Length: 350
Ligand SMILES: *Cc1c(COP(=O)(O)O)cnc(C)c1O
Image (spheres, rainbow, N blue to C red):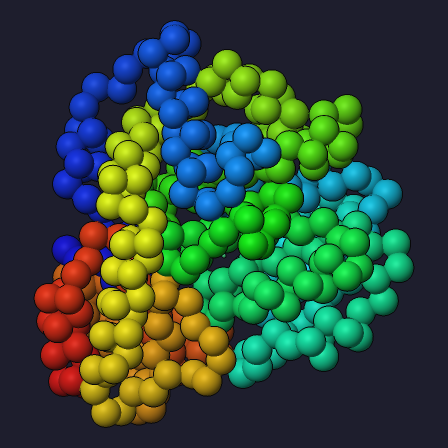
């Protein structure tokens, strides 16, 4: 089986090996050391002064971290949500459920987020901007500079779901100062689904989380932060995935974040440059995580099915109106140029 999907993705041999071992006990110093090392190493990959941030590890898929971040927004505050697809809509739905007031900024499927979108917003009484920096559902990457400048100018906090962009595109907390960054195990980290991470700025924690009451028991960021001081979690974590994470982070630090990002950029560029006729790529800005491929013969669903059934190759289908029009090809995980040569050859046959 070969996965060109965006999560889960092709895993590395070490990850598979650790997954086959006995899950160890965790309420002990040895496991705390692993957790604290994961925190340290993850922060190192985010290009910032690591002493200003903390990480909490939830045992859940990425959506739980989105919900945890929204649950931690002070109840009387309003947020701005950039909604350019299904993941943006998810933030809207979470805010609806938790009674958080919001302004929704819709980004149409064929356009980039622009200064015009942002200038229309009445930011009076707004507390934070909430964004999925890469809207995975259609493979659109938003302009970080634009968002950063807007937040700075309007004194807004920034809550950023970087789940599908982290380890695919540059993400520096020094130049893009998100108060909360959301990461998930099954995307760029190439681990099984099950660990969702929030990287929280210490100032933000002190001002808005530490002394406030969470509306969620399991997703209470304060309970998680207090436990994390000693490298523990309030409830049993996905212990094996934490061990796999520890291994991946060590590997990534050895490789170097710049080399990792360069590899993704090369795979994405190579694939895009060699795409056979009958396929085009949208005009909006793309992440190195994936390429949305427009199938001009409107045979996207067929391609997905045939690759799966005849070749044991998985690409990402799209939902709704794009089901026949677009397939998404992931560039994250344990893939190299040879894999893309094979895929390109097969795509040429449809
Ligand atoms: C994958 C993803 C998520 C998380 O989805 P889960 O199915 O809960 O893991 C959230 N946001 C974005 C942008 C994603 O790509």
